[in-house]
Amino acid sequence: MNNFSKAKVLCIGDLILDCYAVGGVEKISPEAPIPILKLNKKEYILGGAGNVARNISAGGGYCFLLSVIGKDNAEKKLIKLLGIEKNIEPLIVKDPKRPTTIKTRFVSGSQQILRVDDEINKDINQEMEIKVFRLFKKKIRECDIVIISDYSKGLLTDNLLKLVIKESKKNQKPVIVDPKKTNFSIYKGADIITPNYKELLNATNHIYCKENNEEKRISFLSENLIKQNSFNTIITTRSSKGMLVFSRKKKFQLSSEALEVYDVSGAGDTVVAYLSLGISAGLNIKEATHLANKAAGIVVGKFGTAIVKYSELGIKDELKKKVSLAQAIQLLKKTRIDKKVGFTNGC
Picture (tube, rainbow, N blue to C red):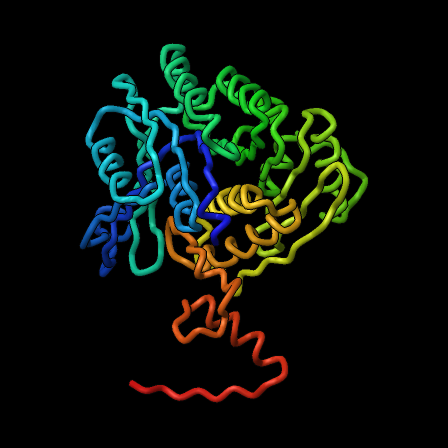
């Protein structure tokens, strides 16, 4: 934790305002076969690259958050949310010609019934590119590592990505990419890239591989991408199957640590956040990936765009009295291997 508190991460990416419109469904509309949601409240949370920054902060690190947003009501809500967060330094460029991206999820109980995205995916113009890159160059020397959080909303143009990766290499800062685009060549030169299995297939155009085994197919595709794009490591996330890590020197697989998958929203954000913290603290790729996998296993057990606090990882003091539900389940699972467990309810 002491090492994580020294970590400084520069995260550049698409900042999103996540809105949860929460209510209850009591009847079906007479106008169409759709549920009628009786709205009770709206909750706003930092999403996209903002969720990466929140996870870095929750893990004990410091994050410079660089992004472009509009000049509208959503922008005001984002600025307010950023002001509440500790250890996040916002580097925000405002573009009056484009709206702030909003994802609104309509929720009844624990079930999402609809998501509405209000956004423009068109690339930012050259003027915005210049402003963003100036801020990036100003802060690059203060950070230990760079995260590119690409939600494909228009901030990370091909040209800006090229400049960011080149400047990071120039300053000897490792680069982690959470990709959304299908053409991985635009991330050429990045150190670590973290696609899910579907993104990996799309990035390689489902090229022919004689191997039917999924792990062998991932290894084959990863090896090709590493050679073509000068990556060091590809970490393929596989939902309930865990992660497969393929680098130039080694390959290993991690089983999922999720005891229950409740909501996968933002799980990739948690992975890159804890990868960056681990590497900043001096962990090797295997140790940092174990840390990220552990955090991912916890976050998918939470609802909505969520964060994982360092204390939830249970790395130290696992037998303290007060623990999270996810941590309690993990402790129970370990204890039941060689002990009998009795339970009493004191309500």
